[in-house]
Length: 459
Image 1 (cartoon, rainbow, N blue to C red):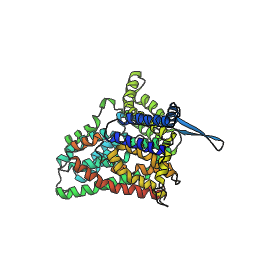
Image 2: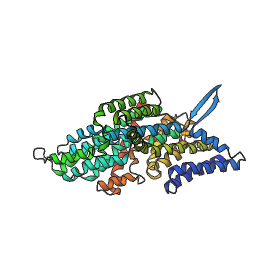
Image 3: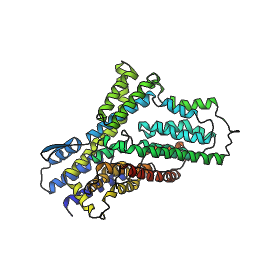
């Protein structure tokens, strides 16, 4: 076993252990651990210690190499970091301005006291609110609107918990969601290479979430003895309180007069992003500039304050993606990653190389639940991707496989807002985790089948 393999394996294991034990924050672990191992490797091999900075630069910014007489430039993590930063900022502005409020309120108006309609409406509301990529705000807004209604009609709170988590897991695949940004960074992919391939699976699983809500609603109708002709109705005051749960989320920032501009601008940006018309970070930067002017006028202070508030959502994620460049740069620059991949290659049975995206997806179920997204995507995925490359499996196919276990991700105890969700829905975490796995595993299978059928995972 080579020195590179031993040190690389130790680096990955120490990183995963530090994250799992919460000894280091992901940001600190991504920088300090690979730096220490990189310097150790250079010292043992008697190379200049300053070479570590070249590896880091290539991981964060770019690497250029001469291939067949042409200069090939490979982007670092900065590209993904900028996309995440500005995408999060744009959608935070849209949420602050109330872009999704009319749709959420329209969904709430349809419930009429019917348990089935209430449950389906809660699912659709969670999906709409989760578009900004912030799980905490999704929980707070959706539970504020629907938990009183669930109590009024004696609907089990655990159903609200899982029907918030399931659609939120779908929209966590968006470019401004943390998991996709981590995968893009780990595999050195652009958002236009991966996100369009995820859309069919996202659509199928969102339909599945509504179907789950429908059958739960039917079950609750039967349990509660719901009779449409004798059903209680929701009072006007109760309806208004539900609307207020949406309207009163920073009401002073809402800009209903700019609704149509915000809607059209968002649709254009999303179309151009999926079509690959321009760099995604540039698209969101342009969107932010026009959104600030149209929504908040020619007011320097207000524009500055709104931008500062919106940036707070994206800066931590962007900083962590940049930090992952330390890990990627040292893993690749030292040769540790390729040596580990070669060692693992001997363990893969002949003819099974094409199944590595599926293997990645299956490993991601316990990986995401117990290691966190940082431990799995930055510690395990890059090694699996290098192994897959030796079998001709593309980084894009591996990226698709790595996103599939998000179907069961929210069974993890490592995300703070899940405990907020359980508390507000008045359910024990153990009961919630069992049920989210019960509905998440079929979603996992749907993702796999959809991506195989569409060719996103070629077998």
